[in-house]
Length: 249
Length: 289
Image (tube, rainbow over all chains, first blue to last red; front, side, top):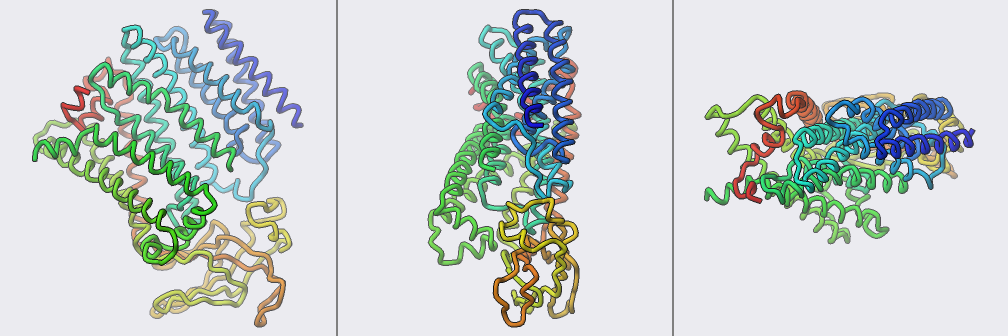
């Protein structure tokens, strides 16, 4: 079975890379076809992972990042259609998907081992909402990347900033829901709402980073630029922290 | 005075305080991942921080880190209070839209959630890692005692020797394994209940949680049943737990409603959500960058 996971993973990697190359070379329709086929294969792989492990694909880096790529691809496909104003963002989204798949390249292509509490509702909400939050913030970053390029070229499209801010706030919301589920889990398991340790500090850093990204002042060209840079980095920051947590366990 | 309050309520102040907090937590992560200080954090988890601060353990650096964290948080709280007060005055003058008012409420809820976290370190009580075998009882405080009347462990106890983290889930049915726990206190009488992993029981705010099962002791001890595994219990009480959970939930709902209200594109709205965010922390100096 593991070879099927690996083969499908590389196939998905190729399909999304092809979508990216086609999008860059302005072959938008071909890019959409590659993307949709990629999404179908990603979905199939996630189903296979779920059936094999008998748990939702939320837990190790391979399955959780695969899930992130699937959500991100869905957002890219349905929220940045080529006919819409947001077409310029598509390249960034496909690029991010390829990068995320690249990140899991060195890790084993297999489902996470089953832990006894993986069928507990709040554990699943905790991990699941983190994945949605990650996908949402990476999608948001794509808008800010494009906005950064536009501002560098002297153009400013407020709809990009607004859409980016929307998905940044959505990511914050999902992360807070995840934290709330985590608090219930902690409360039921250890009778506390907070524990002093690396994982909790990491969650606090993520919440503070999201707060920072949402509260940065603007007004002048320089502060606007700083704001766009910090916001576009948010996806990368969360991704890095998730990888660190995934490696350390 | 006006200048000080403007500075205190500014977005710049909030931003820099958040940056300091991020760095502070990175420092905490660094300390928690070191062998020396991770033990200190374990001690912090074992009891309330209020009690941990008064103990003579050799955790001066951790204590300094914690006090520093509280000071930075208090400063952020001050920023929130001054800023909220300024906005409150604006509301009284009728210069606020619904979404801005909601944003203010969400910020107040955030302050209460932070306060709730702080309260959980300081109020009530907490007894962690109470290792008990079947038939054993432990006295805690003010006549409160907890005991284990019976342990119902349906799986092979030998699976516990590897520790709970490495346990084979196919051989461990956490929903079926439980312990019959007895809680006694003057005025309460005897309260007896089955508890399991992730399935605690609460009586008058005092929660008894089953943290894990431990392998059976190697030697019989005072007539204790040596075939059965033991349990690790946590007895905790946080008087504002329900309020904290409710406010946290309201904060999430508030953010969700605010996001829905401001989702539309800027062409359809007169004020962008970013402007609203800044309206909560308006400082003209900030805007000049």
